[in-house]
Amino acid sequence: MRDFTIKNVLQPTGDQVRAFRDRATGEPIAMLNLLKFREKAAYDDGRPCDLSGREAYQLYARSFREIMEPRGVRILYAGAVHGLLIGDGEDLWDEVAIIQYPSTQVMLDMLRDTTYQAAQQHRAAGLEGQLLIECGSGAAF
Image (cartoon, rainbow, N blue to C red):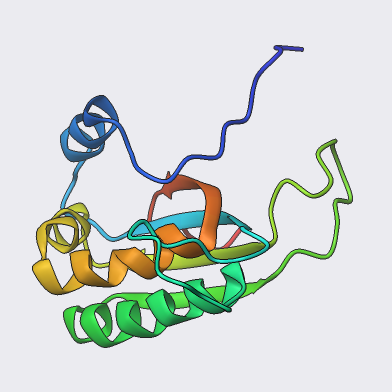
């Protein structure tokens, strides 16, 4: 069995964005989001804040929906993690979400959108880190 390290981070590297772009097929994609919240939200500008990390992230999620649903993005699932049935790593993630994008390009356009970028402050304040896993459009077994 291969040994591996899990690292929750907030932003992709340039290499990751280029590889994501290069894998584009024009087909829909699903992004599996594994989210770890801060206990208390922390904004980069140092503003006083009484929000939990989860509450700050919910502000981001509300803006995300308003910005992206008109572009055909759908939240297929979002919910709390209760525990693991297989594997090790309890407490690595607090919530899971599966988001479907009409194409890779829609997600790339989102990253450059100034309205989306403004909403990112709540995401960064709320998250300790995350894993974002690109998946194909999928099919039933």
